[in-house]
Image 1 (cartoon, rainbow, N blue to C red):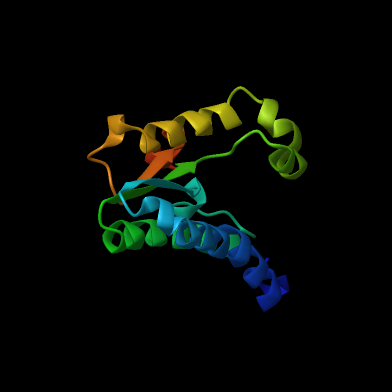
Image 2 (spheres, helix red, strand yellow; image 1 turned 90 degrees about the horizontal axis):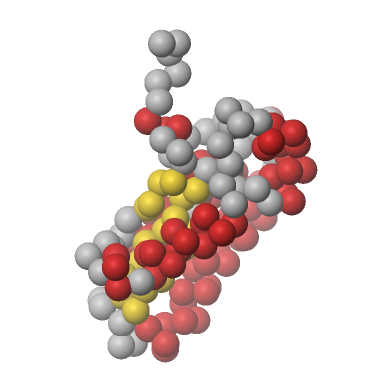
Length: 147
């Protein structure tokens, strides 16, 4: 909850999710001088939220904004980000437990995310720049209202 979240908690999340990716791109600049592609890691949490997720959602929103800014800042370099929904990882399992095994709750694998990254890094996505690829099984398109 927000009341229990310290500034240090927020700084830690931003350091991992935003500053880490910023530094990666900054230090890769010599290898991008002749062009190339950068794919950052966002999350569907840049577009949707859940209680207790303020620092994480804010950090992933910052990654999406940084993607757009870098796409404009770096001529000849395509910069995009993947924004997957829940990925089956040890951290997700620790947070969500058995819900990851519920067929009604679609979950991606790390290989799914890797294929999204490969697409955005490949010549097949040449016209795509400054975009956030939201890969969430259509969850963000669904209404919260009962049918």
